[in-house]
Image 1 (tube, one colour):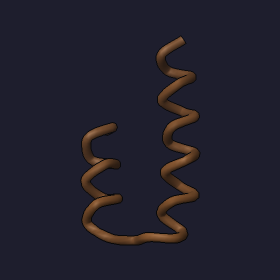
Image 2 (cartoon, helix red, strand yellow):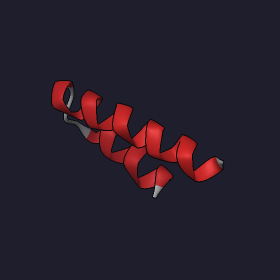
Image 3 (spheres, helix red, strand yellow):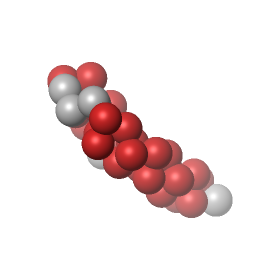
Image 4 (tube, one colour):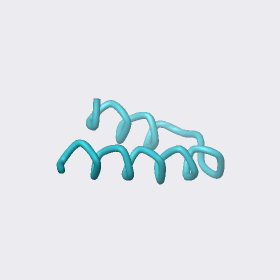
Length: 33
């Protein structure tokens, strides 16, 4: 169940990355990984 939530969150991050590509996005991705 948790894996599904993480996958959904990653999909949202992917969309945000298209808009803002900066240290904030990288930091969020690093925390999730």
